[in-house]
Length: 471
View (cartoon, rainbow, N blue to C red):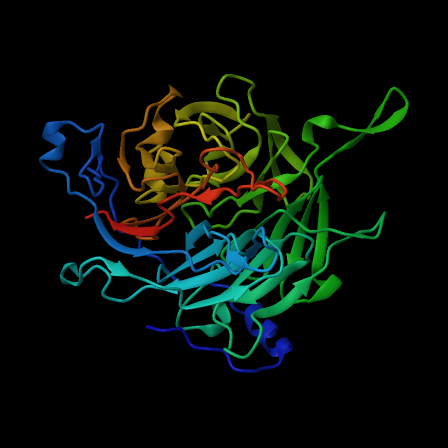
């Protein structure tokens, strides 16, 4: 099914329709939590599974692949007359709420949507090659994208995403714009009232199943936006993350909670369906804090990440367990994921080791549980990207403590796995890969009579996006 293309309409009418679109599609998370699944690569490499388990476990099946589009960024050659396209990589990849579309961002500032064929699981079709259904180029690098939590291919007003980019205001974009029109629907300005400086957030998230409010993070502050009101009118409230205190008679900032808010995640609804206004925030300064953006817009709890041999260099992702009792913290350059039990005083429950990342790329992770009740008992899975091309999986992650080795893993790519995301049903897995390799031979190439020129870094051989079936 192809999406409906929105024709020209009044912006106020479009924003008005978004304001009444509160309920997200019902998702049937039908896959039961298994005791483990056997995962293979093209070379049939299986990790950490016994022969007895292999006899009853199904192998994953590669359903489809996609390559990044040709980069629109160009590099001027030494002659200063010719230019070549820079390599392109997927920066991030995620599922839409209804599981029909994959939304990606690329290094050339492109936001793309891939609508998957309805017969993707048909075994007679072989491995599919999918291409972007639509894409839009942005003038600056895209920092974060939050897809509408009510996304549906049958409802054009839900096919939106809110994003943040360098030196730009927060913007709401349509993922399937008209061929002759811009994808931008609205912009939201955040201004520092003390300095009149425009603020470009680094992280952003929707506040729940309602696509009306979003929360974004920047240096020392959180801001809540109403997407139905454009410009400065869309700014609802500001929550300071750097608390001011009197110390020795001088007004100063508490250094513990100061820094760039680089990751956000809103607590999911409980088993009764009651939504939450609790948001987890992580920073480059290696702290994690919880805020209630609705009832009490101030710090609820906060803690600094431990200093150890597994320490990273700043939080790139925080993600809740489906029950909202556990919090996974993902760091760049870290040796593993940190799992916290946030009931009462936040307690570090476990360290989930993986191959240490050697670059600044964000390696994402995802969680899954067959039901909220099983997640409350610690019965949820954590799926994590790794620098060695493998996807690692921890089962029943909340039921154990200490340093926990992965239950099983499989080689999904021949280079660094950047994104790992599970389909809402839990039966299909999305992975994307790619990194920047240093230039071979010498760092500088010298031509007689000409100045030295630095060789550029090259993209890795595997820069693909792949979709796998669990069964």
